[in-house]
Amino acid sequence: MGLSTHVLDTMNGCPAGGMAAELHTVEAGVAKLVKRFVLDADGRSPDGPLYRDGELKAGKYRLVFDVAGYFKGKGAQLPEPSFLDQVTLDFGVAHPQQHYHVPLLVSPWSYSTYRGS
Image (cartoon, rainbow, N blue to C red; front, side, top):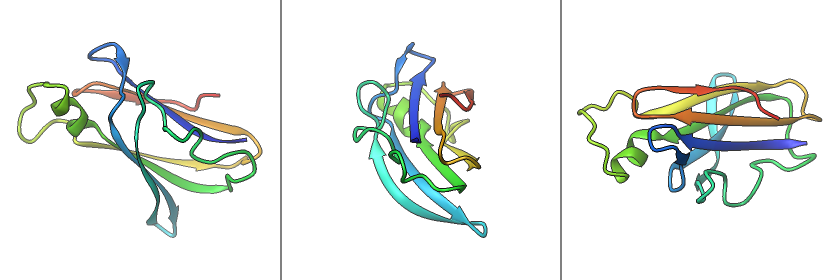
């Protein structure tokens, strides 16, 4: 049923609108860029699902989020180098007929993710 993501800024208590992100496929350990996008005001891909129903295939994927760039753009005073720069989430899709939602909860100092629905 597709693939989606949603990023929440836990430092400011809001969606991470404006954060740059990338989606990759990963085959034999090599990442291939599928698309670059900037999260909308709700912290989601502006084009809707990253893969729609029937487009998602079994395999390995990678989402990359520009966390340091986002927080610097919000005026956060980060050390150089920042503790988190880009957050990379590698995940597998075993059942492409199901929906895979990959949320990210993030601050300049921590992040968490899970498989949502």
